[in-house]
Length: 220
Image 1: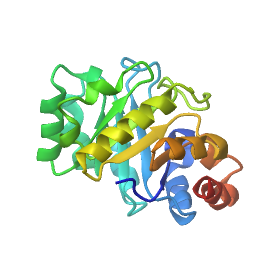
Image 2: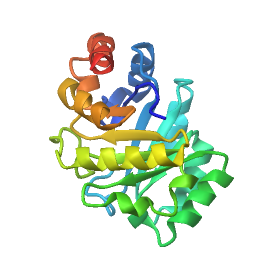
Image 3: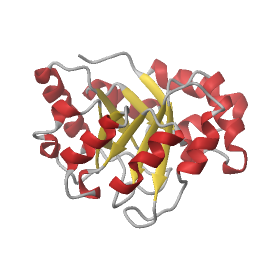
C-alpha cells in the first residue's frame, strides 16, 4: 500500500530566529507535513526545542505536525507534545522500557503513533508492534544534527519494512530522514519510502527557493 509521496521539511534546518515565518513559508511552498525534530542532549547529542515552541508554531500552519521525539525517557513528555499540537508522535524503541505501552499512550491521546529506527536498529524491532503504528521512520543518518550524508545500508532496511507493511496490508507511512536530496530521494522512494524528510535540501537558498526545492524533491 505504498502511498503518494509526501514532503516533510524539517525545521531543524530553518532559521530559528524566525521560525514562525519559516513555517508559513514552507507551507506556502508546498510542504505536505511539517517535521519537528525534538532533541534532548541525552538520547542524541544535540538540544533543539520543547513543547512550548511546538505550541507557538501551531498557529502558523494547518499542515500536520510530524513530531519526532529523540528524547529519553519519552513517556513523561507525550501528553505535553500532544497538547502542543502534534498530529503524529514518533518515538524510538530505545527511548523507554515498553514500546508497545508507549504506542498505546500516544493513541490514547488521539494522535498518530510512529516508531523511528536508527541506522543500527534492525527492522525486526517492529516485530509485534507494526500493527499498532501509523508511521515508521527510518533514520538514514545518525540522529542529532542536520547536513549529514545518506547511509546507503538503510535502503535495504527500507525495502524490508516496505515488504512487512505490504504483507500486513495496512496503510502505514514509511518515512526516511537524513541526507535526502534529489538523488537520494529517488533511491529511497524506489526502496519503498513514501514520506521524505528534508532539511538542508528544503531550506537551501532561502524562502524564494523553497517552492523549487520542494518541487525538485517531489519530481524525484
